[in-house]
Image (cartoon, rainbow, N blue to C red):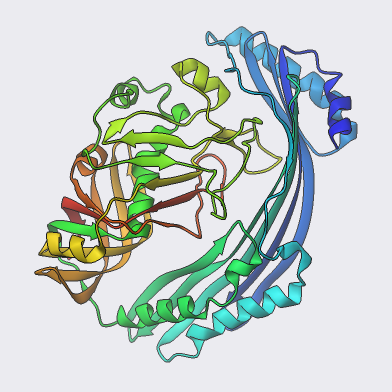
Length: 454
């Protein structure tokens, strides 16, 4: 494939170019209740050509080698028009040129297993909640996505890498009269089908929670000290803080660039946040981004101080900061954009029991359930929680929304646990879909959080 890409490249008259070819395969199995409603497998492939000409950077996607000459002509014309009509000339930060073929180790490659085996495992997990009285329905599916990527550049890079993602996830819905409660369930990762096996206990636990929620009381609205579990704190880290660490989102926003200046004290002194796509066996793992840049662990906050951000080669030049391999595309249809890999709050030394003791009275908030951000303000739903009295867990509560200001909340983080967990089911919809975007955290204690309820 490298030779095919080079045959395209020799026809490109540009200051810089790169070409990415991908073969993408996808398998989906979906159950709605007891009914199998989808079972599909498909494979597609294509090319993305990026060129830099006279300071204009443009990209084009095409699906057949025979379309290359037409695509080259079009993308060069687009780059010239961008250069002519833009005052900002693109300069790509220098990076080490790599030549490597990287195939990650998989614990059971799902591509070598039969569709029957995948179907039966999904069916088994789906049947666990359906055997229980008061479970009204389920929506549970299997998703497998593999990307075989080949990348060359005019600088001499030649990189091949495979990304394989598997998961079984969805929702379990309980019902008692007119009261309906829904709980999210999910297992998965990027290290093979083996991760999906022997996970009955996870589906049994989520089924139990769906039933308990039918007896839970709605949470009273107010301001409270709270503990967020790993899922809830991880989503907060990704959504409320992480996106402002992506250089392209603040590049043309003077207010946010001022607030997100390096060396600014944004959070409490105990708070450290990192993005690290190089952690093996995790959902967000990759070796090279889609600009051919080797992924690097990037410290974002250190003792509450902003010390880094996520970059493409272009924004690294704009900000005068080093590139770090965080420019990722959904697939061959797209040019890459800046994305988080595995973003997380780094653990401290405290146990959950110590956090509960420090909390005293408040709430223990568990598992994210959607949300939104508007500038530096956020609102997130939680699947459920517990009343905490004198450091002890009490009754379950539901209908929870937490909201606040990012910077105030970062400052109000007063204690961090020692129990870091990274999500198995991720995803981010910034511009393109990234199913491997991963987040995590230990338990964290936050003071004075606004909770919307009854």
